Length: 423
Image (cartoon, helix red, strand yellow):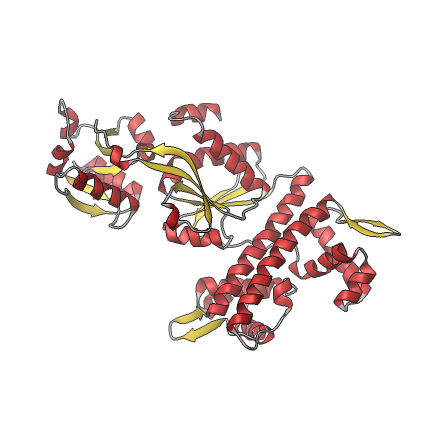
């Protein structure tokens, strides 16, 4: 099994040499190496080597060769669809840069006909915002990264980064180029996984953005099921704020986001797929004074301190709305954190209260460490589900993980222990 959980996922370098894609596309378009070489103004031997290199990297024949020409095989058709999507993203980048810069020029960047290290240098610079940090990540010298950037900017006729005292800042042209480049490279990554899937191999990496509810309830079980069935797959998760994860999703750095859904106006350009309904609960340690009362009202909780997420978070907003709508004032909040482990330990060591989804502390409830106060809180109802790009065509691995998530959430309120027994 392969599972990693880390900072925002970095796009993996594609296993397909991007610099050969233009030759492959030309052969598909013209049906022969000779016509492709004429269209590209390249030697026939160079075009042939490019195709053979791609076939070697993918481990599959991309063309059926005959005296009448070359037609894409099933593998070639899969790669062609992804290459055309990748080129469409880069065409968008070119058009946007042409609007922003009078000197904009076509270059190998827009057909990905460029050394992969140069492409990765752009992405590392956008992420790290520092020439030295990008050089260290790439394992090359800082002057080499600086030279790469200068050459790319001269080649496309636009400045991609502004230099400041605190580092590098993408220009508007830089933002659009790098945004579309990430989406294009994601298509090529998925193409390699799709070709492997046709060969009967379930491999590649699934990258998931996960918010608090998905992290503690659905996703761990779905990942376990997936990796037991397909041990050659790898799953990596990305934690962070909703805004950070949505930006990563839009840029193709992650395959989907799982967690509490925000209103549609916060998810423009994304599809929302509700999976289950969730209602929050007031939680405390077993043996808390309120647990001993014959009946408990929300007003009774005003006598106790609370541990809650920071102001502006969805949970905090629900909490404030809950008390204000019932006209009983606001409790005293003495701890602000989004870390569930910190909240859990504080609850276990004190008489503090918290407002959480019952799914987030299911093990603590089943072991008798924590308890849920018998309060009906319909004002806190919310949906848990998936966020995906509207034009998304997920990789085979992502499709398999999505299927596991949907299977789990289609069974309402099944205890985790039963899930584990069914794995």
